[in-house]
Structures are given as C-alpha cells and as structure tokens.
Length: 347
Image (cartoon, rainbow, N blue to C red; front, side, top):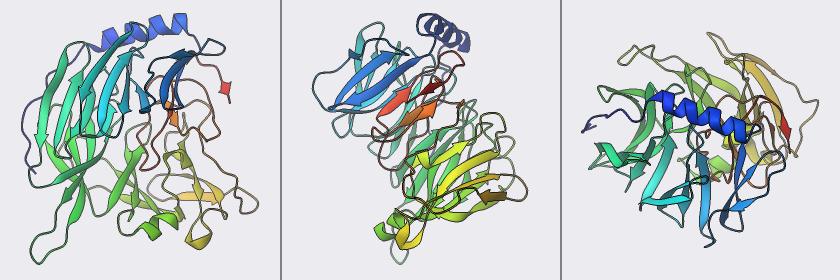
C-alpha cells in the first residue's frame, strides 16, 4: 500500500460543539433528513414542517456532519454533494465517488474517488486535504473509529498471474503517520462499537451472491490500543445474518453489549431470531425470541451514540443524535436523524 500526502487539521472541535448547542436550542429533538421520491427533505422534530432541499429526483444517502450544519448526499450514481439546510448553501464536491464518511469530531468528509484515491473535504474551505493513492488496487468501504483516531478501509489487491485477488482491511491513523493491516480476508465493514474498541465485519460477502442471500458470518476484530499496536483478537458471532447495518444495534451505555438479527441457510428471510450478547475475551449471549420470526425490519437502540441512518421501509425507534452511522453494504440508508436533546422519538 502506498500512502501519500499529509493531514491538515480542520476546524477546531470547539466550533463544532458550538454549532451543536445552537441547533439543540432551535430544534431540541433534532432534525430528520430523508429521501422522498428521490428528493432530499429535512424536518425539525417533533412537528416541524418538511423542507424540500432538492427538486431533481436523483438523490439518496443523506448523512449529517457532526455539527449538524451540513448534509452530504449522493446525486445520481456517483456524484457527491454537500448542502447546508440552514444557510441554503449547496456544493458539488466530486464525481465518480465510492464510499464516503464524515470525520466524527469535525465537519470534514472523507470520500473515495475512482475507487483509488481517498480525499478529505471540508465544506467551508474546500477539498483535498490529503490523498491516499492505490494505483494498482481498489478501495472499498470506509468507517471512522469513534473519536477519529483511525479510519478503517477495505482494500482490494487485483488478481495477478497465477494468483487470485484478495482483500484486506487497513487502519489508517488520523494524522497519516501509519497504516497497518487489521484483517486479512473477505471482510465487509459494518461499523465500530461505540467505544471504538472493536470493528464489526461480515465475512465472505464477495464470495458469491447466493452466500450473501443465505446469510454470512459476522465477526468483530479488536483495534490496537495505539497506532502500530499489536495483533488483533477476533470473535465470531454464533449465527449467520443478513448483511444489513440496521440488523445490528449496540447498547448505548454498555458499549460491548449488542443485539443482532440472525438467520441463515435457505430460510434466512423467514427464519429470523434476535440474539443478545456481550463482547469480551469470550463471547456470551443467547437467543431471546421465543420462535423464529419473519417480521424483523431493523434494530435501533433507544439512545444511540453515533446517529441514526436507515432505509425508507424500515421500522425505527430511537432518540435523536446528530451524525451518521457507517453505511451498510446494501441498500444504502435514505433516512438520517440528527442529534437533539435526550428524549425519545418513536416512529
């Protein structure tokens, strides 16, 4: 892997904190961004009027910045845009964009250009703060560790003569000084635990479409305590699962406790159950639903720690937070809830 460029610090965290406080005063329950008929809307909760921000019917995947001042979203297949709903400012960022994710502390957006270059974009000042170039490889999904110490990145090595292609997941330090392999193999990033100690993955999604349909193994990989740290421990969850980000929910206070919807083999879509367990040196947990079910649509903890994004057809329960969860493999989220006061919103 070739690492080029350097990090330039974006706006101070205090500016983001001030923006959060200002928005909490004007919209104490937060704001909801959502896609309807291909256009982007925002709504102050609980009963503010919806505001339409686009009119071309080509938009999807809205994600709030940490301060709540900006929304990043896709237009068409590969264009990336940012809009400030309050200021009425809309900015085209780039095209041929793959994965994108907001830095969790300040309003800086990481995105992958042409599957090979990782850029940072800061809406008030412009883009391309740093680049990672992968001239002979491909960058897949990305996810910031809570607190912003690392960026997890899927990295593909193409086939060569006599050898098949392969995937690895790298951890890049936030200051750009180090890059290390966290996981070797066909892993797809689902997201981080709220305390940033574990990266959650699905294994084997790229092997064959039929495998993904029938459910795949889910596992966690422990992040090093510091950049360049030692080998990571792995825990494989005991059941297969469909690879949807909203099939996983971490406890907001007990950060190593999680729930996920299981289901595997040919009955994945109908034979679901809810598993609740605890991460640690050993994996402990149990199925808590009395019988297999088919009506699970998604899981959201009552007080999520990092923001709520989901699919337009899902059922949601949660209190509002500002930010965006890590993107699921498919489908991409079309609902995003911003942070407000610590009160519940049921929908």
